[in-house]
Amino acid sequence: MKNWIMRLFGRTPPGGMSCHQVGEVLQQYLDDELDDAERRARIHEHLEECRRCGMEAETYERIKATIAAERPDLPNDSIDRLREFGERLARGDEPSEP
Amino acid sequence: MRDEAAGEKAFEQYVLPEIEVLLRVANSLTRNHAEAEDLVQDTLLRAYRGIDGFDGRHPRAWLLTILRNTHINRNRRRRPELLRDPDFENDRQASLASDERTDAMVDDEIDSEILSALQALDEPFRRVVELVDVDGLSYAEAAEVLDVPVGTVMSRLHRARSRIRDRLDRAGFAPRRTS
Image (tube, rainbow over all chains, first blue to last red):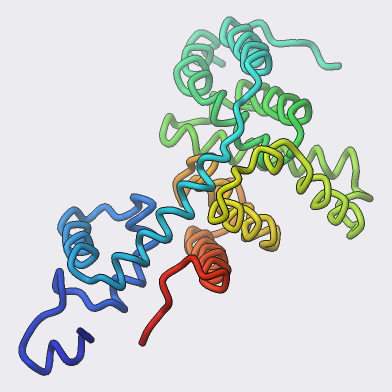
């Protein structure tokens, strides 16, 4: 039900937030960038109860997950060489200028 | 007088644990494993030389700033003509389309659509999505790498994902927006 109709009948939207308000912070919510635990809980409640926003969030979660799954494996030999280089520096063994 | 032992301890404490993150971000910036490794090596050296001036707060952000500046300086020094050459950018886009990451795309239509949409994004938008979703950086860390305000990271991310979502929508995969 549209938020303004809910308000007209004295009902508050799910989580006490309108779809527009949720939409404005949805990306931050999905990226775990919201510090306010109470706000996160209210968004969660809204997404659970509002079908349209819930589906929207699922779509963005799918986009994030698909892109995250593309994370390439780092070459182990590169990591090993860089660790060795870093450990040498940590021992004060600075290479001379090329 | 410089306390070398303290500097070396700080380097070990703050810098060494971040090597993998630095290499991951360097890969995103250079799209070339060998270049990424060289970039991180230069970054480590600069961090080592600058460790005395580091206050111990937000080591990852500090290192990402060094990485970004080192990347810019290396590009200026090594290939200034490429930075201004639009053909180079086109070639890079073309090579990206045929690289391992694209080859490894799953057959699933939705995933294919999402990844195609990601590749179709303009560079500033695609880069911020990759830094956050692929490299796992926070908004603040991505802002350090890109040298832009956090708000710019947020707005680019929002627009980028909206474009991907709209493409899914057009392909019939996303729920339709209703007013």
